[in-house]
Image (cartoon, rainbow over all chains, first blue to last red; front, side):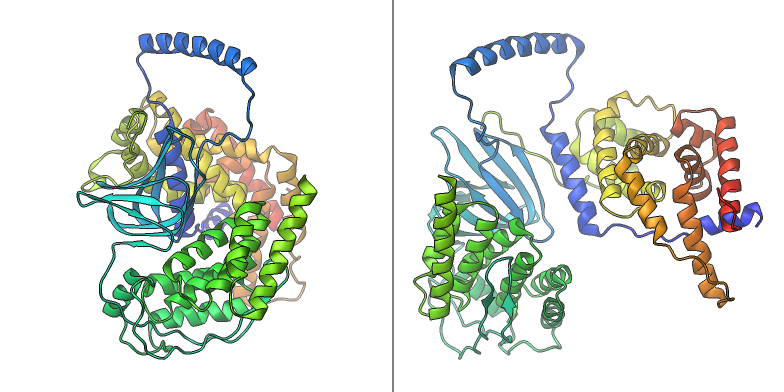
Length: 364
Length: 198
């Protein structure tokens, strides 16, 4: 074969470009690393800095011998979980921890702070400050859109005002609410590497006025977007949901996550949004992506605290916390689910509590 | 808010095409995160493709090398003196990192396993499209099996379309060396496709 043929063929060798979200993830990682690096200094300042660093090392070495080093001392208190495409970066670490969010939704789980420490999410000119909590924050084009608290307490400073939110509360609050119809889905066993939980079909909800304390933000937004009819295959959110469901049943968890994500993006407040959010979390769990599953279940519980699937989500969340070794949060989730009225949920929650106890005894 | 620092995550304001590559590198050297983001936006596609062809892989290895490349770009920006095109400089960084990656024994074992799984061409005459695919698969496997210094030269010149001078600058060798390596690579690939061993 002549030389030009080799070169011509080489130009036709197939190539698979990376998915856009992977590129975005790489970009954010690189820029975050760059942002946390110190700026270059002029030569004289470098010498002064080097000298100061040496002195600091000596002091630190002396202090180290005198104090007990705790290898568990964290650099971050906030465990950050992006939900879908997000533009964000960690701007600084303890004692004044700042996460800068520009666009998208983050779920954050913040361990209790020590005295004098702070942890904030900054969006444009708004801030959400926390003391040790799980919450979800949403931004669009550098404007704070919504905050929902799962547990703990946060302070939201926006629009020149400050408000404190407790567990189950949202910002902004809305006075008008309406119902959100739920799509029926067939039962399927959800296995997250632990005893499987058979989910019961979600009954089609009869129209009823929603209680103001039950997700008022999402309910009001749903009123603006929903046509009031149940999801059909003709609407984009419903189509994507159906694709996700088919993929989930076929065992393709990755495709299921992608499709449920698409459904939520296309119709974040549509009639299948609640189901898409729940099954996306379940797909993460089935794929063994524990951190993502924890974020997704947490977000689901913040957005839909009155859902018929809430206790089920708490049980699955508990197993995900167990998978990551977080016994305290696992027990908290199981304890909450154990008060559910459905016997099978109670039984699963008790199994989870027993497992927590067993692992706790083993580590003692 | 002592010690806190806000990170500009936004894309560059206005049309980033107004900035030359060299201007973006210079801004990146001063710690401008938005300029670094624009550099990534401008070159990520070609770097992913180059690394993919160099490693013969579209998986996690490629992603690691690309991320390491852009990290090194942001760290080395202040040492860029404009002696070569920015793309050539970035490709040089990627080639160095990829070379280190390929040196690992684990990587070689993976390549051998992948090559072993490619089926041999059938003895009966298939249709044209199937034959083309088989030839491309053989060529792809043969490129991966080339010695790394030949593969680098072949990918840069014959697949990425860089001129001899730019390819030489990327790899830090003389132009004559590049052309010799390209010639050897083509010969080896021709032999592999014709049934001989490279």
